[in-house]
Picture 1 (tube, helix red, strand yellow):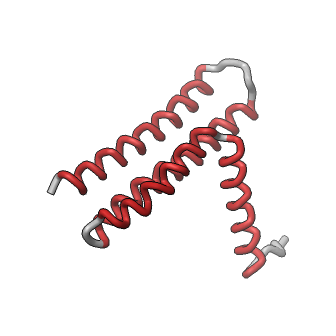
Picture 2 (spheres, rainbow, N blue to C red):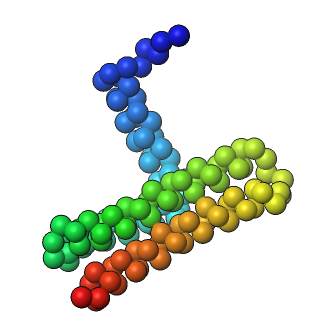
Length: 120
């Protein structure tokens, strides 16, 4: 069976679903809100502080990576909670690993910003 969602309609629907995901993350996830507000400060700052395109890309990209990882972590947490709320070793691991990924992304921001701004 061929899908009717092709061409521009498919792109439109994908953009709409993406926007819904961002809006839901902002409404429901305090960590995402905090990281988004931080990004709204750091992205323009990174564009201003970077001496060239590569530095700007590193500074901004490291910040945007945190938002990406937070969204994936939130997705993992939601799926785990959907499957069942009773404690389970694998559910705990999945949530802990998602949280660890966010931590590593935040550490990456500190490392990249430190190296770009103070390492040269």
